[in-house]
Image 1 (tube, rainbow, N blue to C red):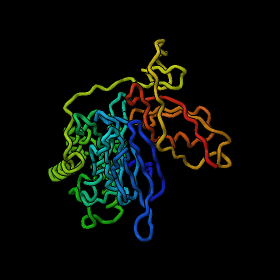
Image 2: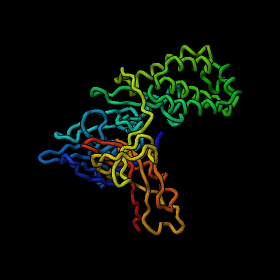
Image 3: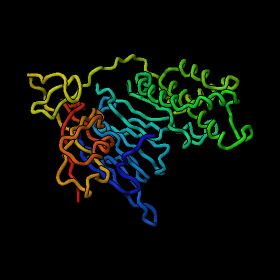
Image 4: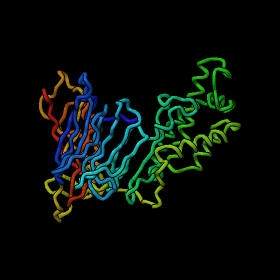
Length: 389
């Protein structure tokens, strides 16, 4: 599960801005109940209209603002957790072109994070299948290392599963899980009936080891399955699971897969090639240029003038307590950031800073993305970070 940066958390934190279309985006605390407990609300306001996003939630976070999620218009997407428990979060997407209205709602995951993963202008929504896995095979959701990863992209106005385009990310998880499997525990699990319990085992310690092995194997199988590699998923099941229980668990995992976030989501019918070079517009140099190699070097600047780039604007820039001796840096600090077309920080480099924790903190920062000729783009720029004393 990912660490979330929340705009308003249990009545603390607020953000207001007016988008270029004239629509105000407002997130902040509200009072509720006779004891004046605090909660979070969000709304969109334009001349003559007001759209209530939510008026009583434990947490409300702006995931993207001004990005195009493939719907042909700039949007604002909210993560809404009504109870504040961090489970079953709802992702609501609203148009920032008039009339302001909800375009789509996703549910079933514990988090949602939109990103232009390849920085090629196509934005994906990364989420998980947390809601269906809680209690699967008698295992509480908290005992799993993570829920199955899901990658969605909007095509023709509808979300489609594009996990098969990101097998490298899934393979990294699979490799880590396989490396953690103990050879002796795996052999013992394969001799079992696939359903270890204290009725069949001699000690709680043995049960714990076999349940951890079982959980890791299930996680391996569904990382293959959720990346569109069904054959590899079932081959891993045959390799790692007790043979006498393989038919039952295959049916159970298939059922879980069909009931989750992907229930009403199809797989992409298009074969997308992945770019080997990122498209990053450079606001660090005096003349904006298109960098086609990497954020910090590569292709020389073009001699032809490029249309101007509107620099990203901050939404959420929280920083941890300073690691500098004395608690605060002596002056403003400067970072060089690459922010993608979804407004997410993809890389950060220190230009002038003494706080070692700034780079780590920047991974959770959210921006209105840079714009070029009216379209959101990836951009490299420098940001001065000051400390309020």
